[in-house]
Amino acid sequence: MPTQSFMAYENETDAFQIDSLTVENRLDRISIYGSLDLTKNRHGLESALKLKRIIDASIDALKRDKNLPDQITTVAAESVENPF
Image (cartoon, rainbow, N blue to C red; front, top):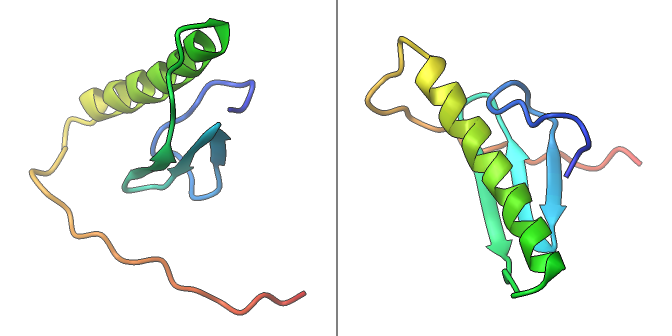
């Protein structure tokens, strides 16, 4: 997870991992996929706190949006050929 605050719904570029869990920031959604074991040790606590910060930032951003629609239609990301 980045060292700065997670700015939910602010860009299309943030992507990071917590163990095998991937988080992608988008303008219209936060995608979370993969798996994460919250083990009963310091590492599990750190992982749980990282996930909590993501969820808290997402909830805060949603609460601040006074024009939050009931639903949105998401558009699948377009795959492009790697230019390298």
